Length: 78
Ligand code: SF4
Ligand code: SF4
Image (cartoon, rainbow, N blue to C red; front, side):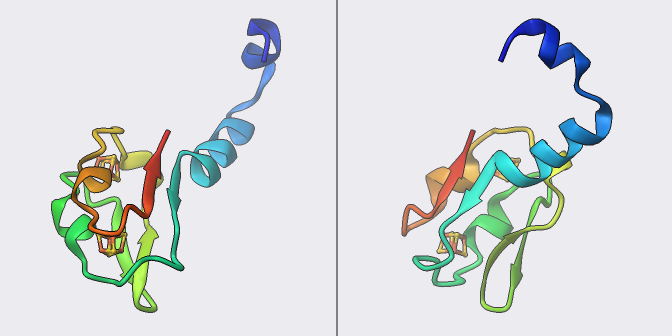
């Protein structure tokens, strides 16, 4: 993406992109152990219906503690 188009994006577009794109959880492999939920220093993740889920992506500082602690390699943070 060029700088101009980046600057032209309004806040809503950016918010949508953040919300949907920077934390990926492979729920097929998630066993719901809660290690990522407990380890996240910013309370970004929750257990929802037995698997990890993003509750507050805006709080994420991309520290990747959750990625490191997951025993099943199911979290990706970009
Ligand atoms: S990258 Fe860090 S702040 Fe973001 S969800 Fe994972 S542990 Fe939490
Ligand atoms: S640490 Fe991994 S397996 Fe455990 S709840 Fe989080 S995403 Fe699921």
